[in-house]
Length: 439
Image (tube, rainbow, N blue to C red; front, side, top):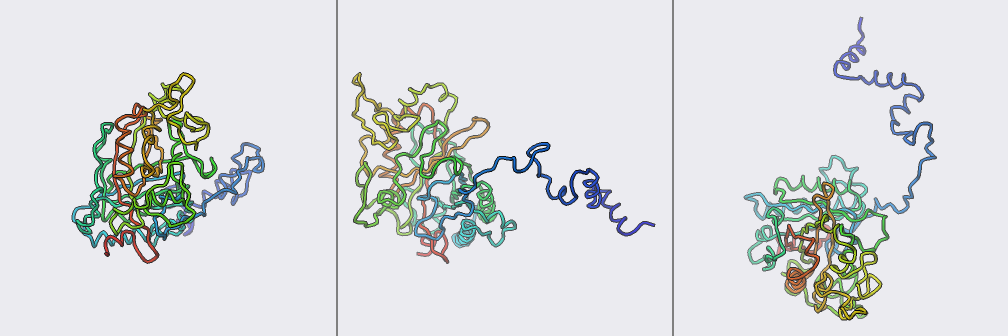
């Protein structure tokens, strides 16, 4: 007579291993106890006869999984925040018929969930909250496009919020030049970032569709000391001229107004104006603007250029990132310096000269860049996120000069271009964009 338990095992066997057979088969294999064999399949990977203590160990004292960046603050995180190792840019387009009330409901949901995720907590509807427990400096930065802002009233839309003028170097793909809401999700752990992206997309799919998305990366956390300038895929140090976070320069150049500090210190570029944010609409006070350019990089043709040609094109050394007129990365370029032949050390057509020579202290930006690469270099480039208080006074004068003449254009092509209003940060109980929709 077959017992009830035997019947259950037989039934299980018809579909695969039963739990009893799994345990029996592991025990029959010998050499280890049942519990150890079932629960520790990964033990002993150091090799036959190897001991766990023989395996190399990692120094995890610098691990930053539990570190958080503030969410509730006067300014949004992800702008002045020291750049993280990974980024995901997700641009969303509103579905037809979505009105202002529905957008507010969406923004409330996104705000609550972004606040939870960045502080190491799972949103209310999170079925895997454990994935959020180690945020690793996760930040979520919101950018508003023209279509979303228009729902709050046509008079709310700044004149600059729209496509940039067409530059002769552009070869733009229309699909990479659209969107009503941008989510810039950054963090040092790709698992936490992927989970945040999934949660925020779940919040969004009722209201919007994906316009485009792009993953980016910098050096992994711990591979370089904090504060070091990153390298792009050309091997160049990228971001040397950025204003220092927390400085008076940063406050004026990016947030558009000074701090009022009597001991303000300015960079070698001189004192920037204190009114770069004066043109921003009231709902953007405490915010800034973002020009996001997707720049394809031709690594194959770059490989054919020798080091002197590369350095001549950029105006900086590749090893130290120093201007060709100096020896240190942060030396101010001297565009009048000549070599022993009487030739200027920095070409007037080089990237650093075109981006800087002759421009005033107001013509500065904060570049927060991330590399991307797929298919063994088949598609490679730079996500160039330029933050500034005033696009017309700060970004466009630089971009126009680079588009006119820049030796680096030989190897780079802008393929995507979007402009975003970065609203101010929020306090607890508020939602992102509240200053726009509840004026």
